[in-house]
Image (cartoon, rainbow, N blue to C red; front, side):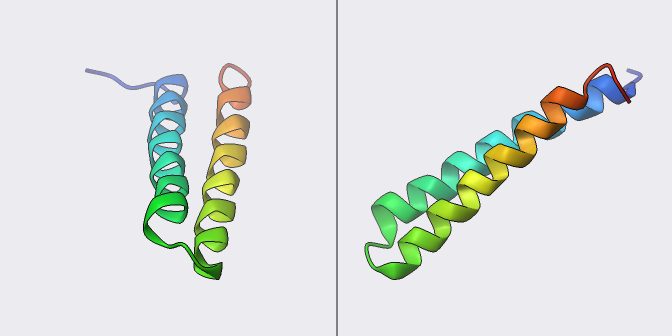
Length: 60
């Protein structure tokens, strides 16, 4: 199975969305104090990077 650069970016986007969702869930359900805001902010940052990876597909 050969993976080209678009496939690698698609997998990276998928993995980053999963990690972002898990970090937001940790911030929302596990840590109720100030550290929960940090987990949620990092999760949103993962979404932003995943969005950039998705936009790069076909252009790199």
